[in-house]
Image (cartoon, rainbow, N blue to C red; front, side, top):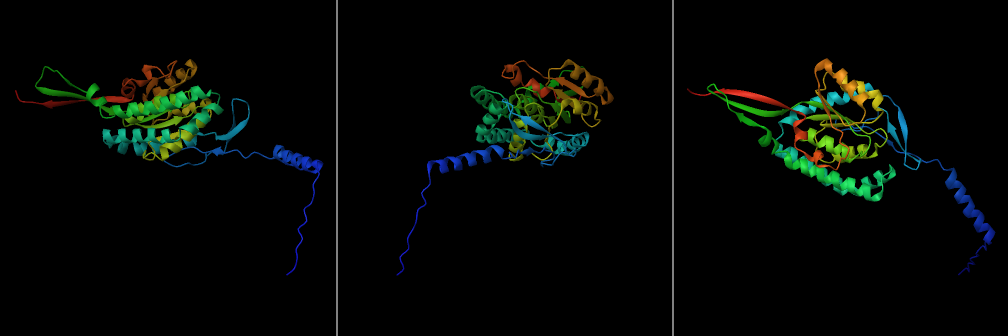
Length: 313
């Protein structure tokens, strides 16, 4: 048997300090690989057609992600997907639409820690972020509950003088463009989006430009929540570049503006004349207020259809 001698190399304290210093230098010189967030169109996550992006910074000024800058082509693709999905979504039972909204709430609940962290990165306190995520989940559940009830509240049998039954019922407006709020990037988005889709509309939304993280992560929640492809499409980019496209596209039936700029809203109104779009301004000062939970928010994106049915003398 051969004896083997194991020798230990004795290292001095100076050697160890040099090694630690080298590791720290390597860390400081390492290039940070940022995630580039894609957009969400027709149930898929394509790259922006423009190939452009901007670097998103945290509230402390640290680069945290690359965010796509969508173009007119991206918007047109999203409208095409929304139009293709809208009729089938409107034909789904109210109960089924409510189930799907509830499923979105379940999936958001499962990822609440992630959304809290993203809100904190974008400047919220931990307490405010937790409140925003929890209220967002509750708001989805709230509108899910209205899915099979709003028709009973807002439809009617109308008294008429002739020998007819006269019924008024609600129908979805169609494809709705949503310009999400810059602040309250999760709660504001969900408060505006939920009443749009629960009423059978499809939606193309533009996320907050300054705080888009929760919006693009919310696309992943939608993708795993049984929402049919094309019902919700999420774009990112600068509002000043896409505002005119949202308000002038001939196949968009309504625009919900959740911003605070009177100049932007005036531009939307002027462009919307081209095909008589319905324009809704929804920008409450407090997204936690009861106003944001009103079933009248569903009514904003509904058309009233009246039917006359003759009866005997």
